[in-house]
Image (cartoon, rainbow, N blue to C red; front, side, top):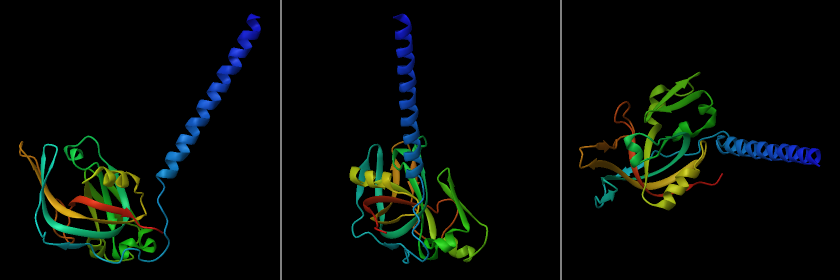
Length: 211
């Protein structure tokens, strides 16, 4: 009887191990699929430069310990070239995700296939194996942007955005401050580069465009 119990326990252990391995495999495949870039094909998918205007009324928002001040109204349709999630820096209190967005010819995959884009420490970097368009156009047709979700619904959509998709957003460029002298200010130009060139956006509406 003991031998039979031992054999049954052994088979039960094997079956459990198999199920666990199968679940891990499915989880790995699901994660791999979720991180794969969306391929939309050749051609410019987001032709217009982001649109910025002076705010009709510069509102202030309290976001936890931070004061968020609108400095410009902002509307954009762009292609997602890269994303990086942040959890441990001070900025993560406000913005847990940075995106590199591209418009004009920086939304054309025939151009993008020659450009390698990476992100680190709230910056973005590019390297071209072949310059299909001028360097200045690359710099002026793409940007790393920090997104602050104005609502939980916006935050949920931001979580779902994949590299390669086209998104449309509305909101405000903002400056952020706190009582302990922390500050984080948005760029107000699409033509600047280097330190301070990233947009900090209070996102009130965002959608993933159909393709």
